[in-house]
Image (tube, rainbow, N blue to C red; front, top):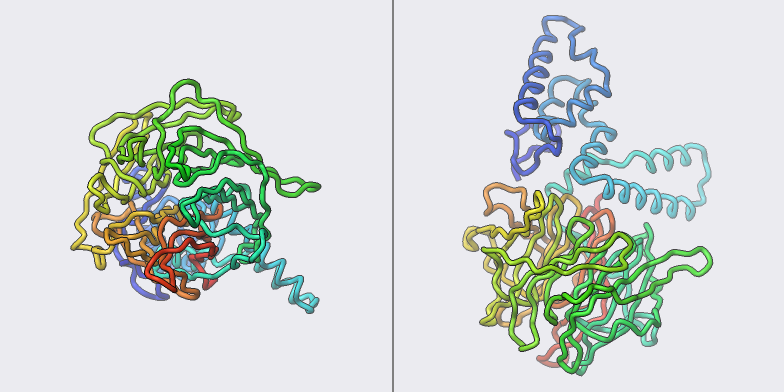
Length: 500
């Protein structure tokens, strides 16, 4: 992607794909870079002494954190001391925290500590050197290498976590369900199954920081909400907010529910649903719409299939009270806005922006357009991002419906699966990066390694708190014994950085 990471290589020109998250102005950054270069060049005149070589390391860290990545890599080539500073894990942990946010970095550190503790407990070695090595590993992750892998992401690794049992210890096959990662748990609700029937079961599996373990699913016998598929379900802290859906009688819903996860030392994981009071105003009933959380306090929905069986193109925002006891729906009517559709995705990517992608339109055509829902300064508006399919390698396979689009580590979207206009299911991964310029570079095909799952559509996917691990469950797959379809009950893990 243009950046030179190889040891000793000449760094490229500053890349617009990664820029400083600091509020420092461009002029200030240029001034710092000019001063740094000037002081570095003067080192030959001072012999073994120059002003910059006597700047404290923590001050140098503060300067470097104001610069884009290419400038940091250029700085590292000035002298051996600066290379050591610019390549230090401490600095790169700070860079990761700057560009990815503290939540992702803390989650990565927690998962590393957990996996290291598990490995050390199974080892028979108890030597002091081994203890020191484990201690170093727990606190010194290869942050620069992790950053490089995430930025240059060209492949992911898939692992099959578990397969359905014949009894009730594992959720049954389904599609168009909801599937969320909340409070260290996977939470699954509803969906459609064989015979066109809806499901009303809720399942919870605690993961914590051990991302590759065999899961112990727990069925929650709450009986509410009523059975449905094609609903939306989004996460707010320890809460899940669910809206709409369709039952096996074709009845569309417009009720709003709140689910809460609780971890208790005595009772383990508990989960409860309750109906949310939204007053007299609510979106018209629908299913197969898209929904996501925005600003950590509001829910956004768009489109779907309404009461008449026609696809709709309206946009609604739910403002939630701080204690999640009530909420207020409000329709957002702006122009331009996305056309009517179903089976599309909405994903909040931060910086007051939400991405809408794909779906099936009014004429049953499968779409590939990208829209941004922007809430900057309290103004709600839709913006379309234009690109040409023929200019993207493999881009003609982009249009899809029934896919998943998940925010991953690095602030990009990982799009997986779905089906095309001929109802052919897919197993490909695509990376959507909104920070790239020009727009044609915002799409990138990503290879998959390891376990190869079936092509699928109308599955569900969710990422852990770090954004480094993606869980995929269920969906529609091709039936092996016939030319028809079957509901899938498989759970697998997609790992972004398997080399660490």
